[in-house]
Amino acid sequence: REFIDMFRDEARITAQLRHGNIVQVLELRQDDGQYALVLEYVDGVSLLPVMARERLAGRALPHAVVAHVLSEVARALDYAHRKRGVDGVSLGIIHRDVSPSNVLLSRDGEVKLADFGIARAASRISSTRAGGIKGKLAYIAPEALLGEATSRSDLFSLGVMGWELLAGKLPFDADTDEARMFRVISTDAADVGALVPDAPPALAAIVMRLLTKD
Image (cartoon, rainbow, N blue to C red; front, side):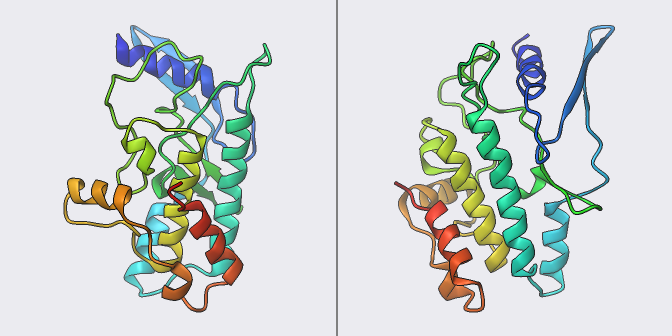
């Protein structure tokens, strides 16, 4: 029942998000007790295999492409974070899983953020169990690991993704989940501008600002 309530929440919350950089929820279907979301079809791929392909080839995405992807995802987050319901009250949406697998790239050059399925909103029916961690550990913000996620946590995750796009590796990588969590909470990311000298200074500075722990 709890899972079904969360699934219905996803439809109810995300159906209110109408933005060119967010995958649209078109319909919630129920057939013989089975629930399904009908989503906008994005003709393309996620950012994840694109990054993997470039990494295998020993290349990095062009910096202009990195800047474009980050700015488009930022537009999606800004809209979602500011979104208010029909009563004028903020929906309190936090995506909580900003990562390459949830960034879709269409063949027409569109960038769309997908899967608000684990978003926390003030208006949702179901509640996350105390102590539960939602999102991928490689991209999660330190305060989210401590159960205190805010909209700024999504921006930290965007910074992790930007750092990875520029450097070709994760800023807080480790051999175990425990070690990764410790690094996220306790250590600062290396200066990506120093690691990637040809990166535009303004872009590197934005990424590092996104990764500020405070």
